[in-house]
Image 1 (cartoon, rainbow, N blue to C red):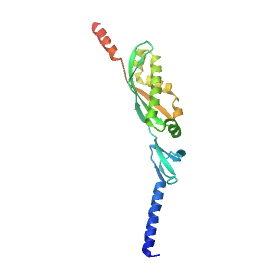
Image 2: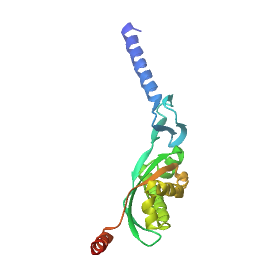
Image 3: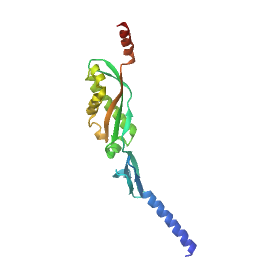
Image 4: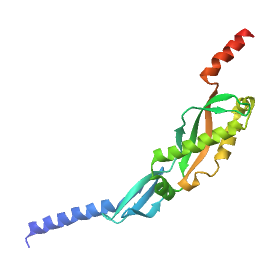
Length: 189
């Protein structure tokens, strides 16, 4: 074999080896889980940052977030124990605790997770506020109300592989329809 042909063959083999090596490397960052999938089934979860390897062309990877995320709920009206209507605007801090459940139950979709969080948090807010008088809701802004709501949520989202770490209310207010009557009463008094 000629020397030129050997060089071309060696160079081609070297390039193919680089392609195979690069397609077998998996980089995992601090803020993610890496799922290694083979034929659509998870064969390994990588939860430590660094470089690892997979079988090239046969296995693929999928990233799942491993950090706290904020979900801003839609403002909603809730009734207090003393039958007064209040508008509450809240947000929730949440994170993925089990990437396998997150993938299998929610399709690794942040939108699906936030949809579940929205229902659970709304119900917890509604239950806590409906069992509290309006004056206590207003005075509970020192963190007590948020603790009660977070306790009410508890482990209800564990089956989805997510956890709500904290719920905070950004705003507690009277509905617009009640504000006018309150202002009129204040003026008349």
